[in-house]
Length: 334
Image 1: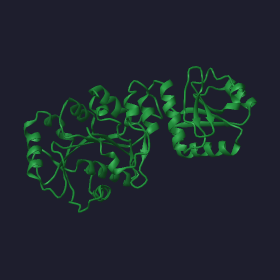
Image 2: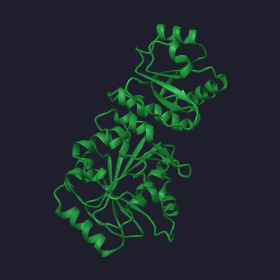
Image 3: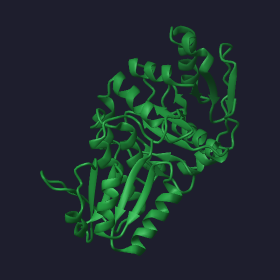
Image 4: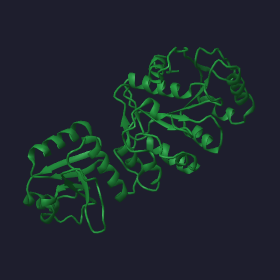
């Protein structure tokens, strides 16, 4: 389901530029129309129903906006979007188009609580986990995401570690994922689409880390399921990076996953914890068919109960981005 949007402005150059970008880059999200006069605006609103109308303040008195789910006023200057009772919400005219799109989606999610958005294709979900900390799990998760991108897939990275390391790998100049976690009873798919970033170097889509440790730690199993299910929209592959503890929330994520990458490094601690999980934990038998053993840092671990293995080298670098990009050349398609 696309959002039907109308742009009303007397600035024909701006209207043409904005509508062209929306048509080229956001065609799966918006069905966009443009008008440049109050009379034309009145005619369009009387003849058709629009989900969103973005208009200059001079057009407000020309329009009957009662049937529009979300009217937004384009404003000049540096003032940020604001809202007061009885007033129409505002968005800044001169900012990056991606920021305008984000503002529109975030505001629209508040007035449209339904989950429908841009079709309902579900991404393949790959979970990356290890019972041992320090095994290189995040590097493996990002390497897997980069590998998917290089194969022509749209890949999204979701970090659900207790302490997020996203800022080490990507610029965090967008809105925090906490903006979504605060509103899990809203249209979560649309809110996520509003804050999703894309790394220009790797092509991986991602979300900026939470504002607080508690924003992730307090999520319930139901919250986790809502979040992950919403993240599967608008991408082909969802790579979920998890903390190393095991609890009922991790179990829920395992249930949702299509594949589970179990990461092991060469240390005796990592091998021992992996062996214990595989052979003593009753959950393993239920997820066994999904599991791929990832021998990271040139580990040589074998587990008879795991048929599929990915072998990754030890990368001699102190740059975390260089490490995951090098590892992305591994054979993750198993």
